[in-house]
Image 1: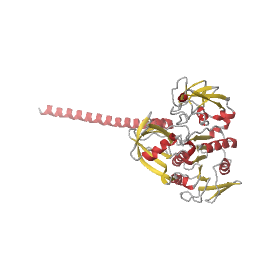
Image 2 (image 1 turned 45 degrees about the horizontal axis):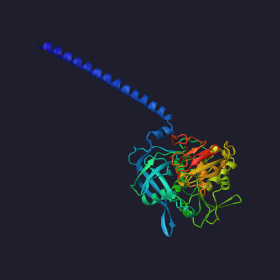
Image 3 (image 1 turned 90 degrees about the vertical axis):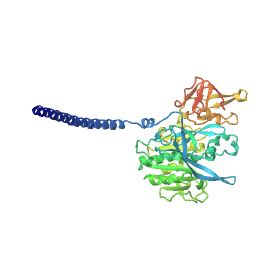
Length: 455
């Protein structure tokens, strides 16, 4: 019996030893396989990440339509006196998602978002440039209160969105936000090494802040020339952001051009690379608060920028400034692909070369107004007239104001019917459109046409 027991113990021990050996071998092989798998996976990830484009990264957390956001912070940037009262002039709104996963999708600095506001008169859709560098936590828009000039008091809708934001939107308020979009933008993920010239007037500085702050994060040594056109010191928006840009960008110069200086200077930290320009005479730039005034002109820009080749120009501001600078850059000899602009409000800005080389010929545009018994107004269109909407806006005393929103073919607000032929500079984002529908904000007539007033 003892012999059998002994033999049984030997067999059990041998089996246990065999099992332990197999376990150890498989354990080693598993970890060798795991290490090899992880190494191959990391190599694949690195190889794939080299091919990732900015657009593919944006799509990771993108969405369609409008999503719920809340106003996490509201900051009054500047104030002004109106009828003896101090009211907010420019306010920044920090928007955080309520239902969209974080991180927020990236965007190209200079792009804008759509913002739907729940007003007492119903939903109101507006478009605002993003005014901060891309980040994963929030979007920021900085909005100036739009007060219609006396001769345009009937256009109350022009200031409706900004007024509602300033007076009714507080921290914690819910708004609806669309994905960042737009083709007025600066590619900061590719360091091309060429200088960047940022030209803005008034609140047109907002996309420029986004561009400059993004460069501070990604290309802090890139040469940047930033021009801001204002009337007087108190009108300079976003002083803290300008201070940040002047500090963080190693090779930046900021020029604050005041057309009607009052002896005061903007509330900026004194820096060698921030210049308060109040005069320009005989090719001489006059700095300090005591000049007679200096417009942001192409002559001033040429004097400061010089004849370096390859710089990219970005412009945003009121229509008169935009038209003057775009024309000036063309006749200076700057290439079309190096000049980028975006206006606000009715702003027919055309590259002179496009007009000179246009295949479109002068024609007649007939506006039919159903709200006035199908009455007709005939206007002459020329290549310099811009889009159909630009033509209508230039003759408001004859044509009832047409609907306008984004001005870029994104939203479809200006959609109407027509008879004839229209052409687009590039296919609009909004669609699909029916055969007899067009977007008046971004199309031009190719021959005589009839357009329905959609006001």
